[in-house]
Amino acid sequence: MTVLSTIGRIATELGAARSRYLTERAIRALPAEVQKDIGWPDVASNTAHAAGVGSWAGGK
Image (cartoon, rainbow, N blue to C red; front, side, top):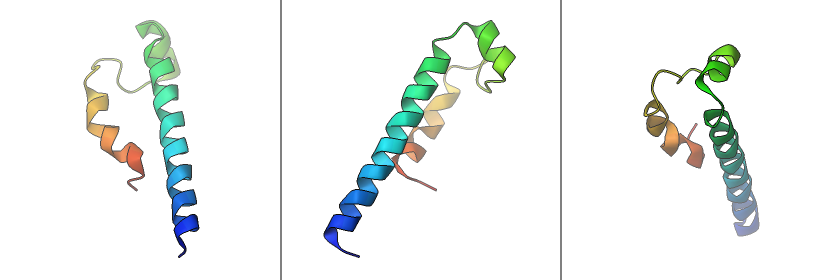
């Protein structure tokens, strides 16, 4: 594996993590009723998302 391919892979993972973060932020900005209607799992607890933050860095 070359250095450039490693950098490319990391950049791809960071882009995907940022996209997931922005999507979650947008969903959390919606009213609780709308979140419930679309089936967002963390409507009852706004602290539940903190446990998954580490997985955004490319953890599988």
